[in-house]
Length: 260
Image: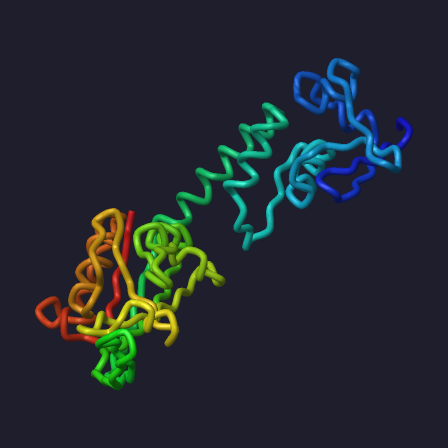
């Protein structure tokens, strides 16, 4: 065994051996630690690599075992792909490709459940009629919520790339609200005629849009139509037992299935 070497990868320290780091001579690490590429040092004298420190554990473990071991709930595949591409360890690139094919096959058979809820609430707001004249107004507003569960994490990510919240004058992808890879809850309101734009922000009211069509979702019918369009493009079909196809737009729970 060679003398241990401590690496500082993006601020995270790892200790390994020179033989492990150079086990694939044609890789970026092989070139760095064989002297072909100069290495940088941090203030403590550790070799410094300005890459993601958390992901490096999977890179290093592959160097040690020649196996790509990922946790079952691993959610950072795009980041791992970028890091693997940087280090250019060819057997690891091939192992990652095999892992992605494996995950893709596991995702093919899937279920999608959507539970819908709608209520009406009254909103009060002020309207500026003149520089020093304001009047108090009120209006009824439709408030929607959709609880979405899918066994396919990839489908929820796809959905997140199509649906956007409109808030404070900006559009933001609902992907940022996807904290659970299998569950997504959406809450939004329909536009209210006469309600000033700043009131949506002041009252923390989000509206929902479909991109790239730039289409606002002001009813459950439009929401169901758009979600069905996205789901069917991804191979889902309506579970004929729940609900009946003729009653689809009036149902509060929708189930879709995918077999491939």
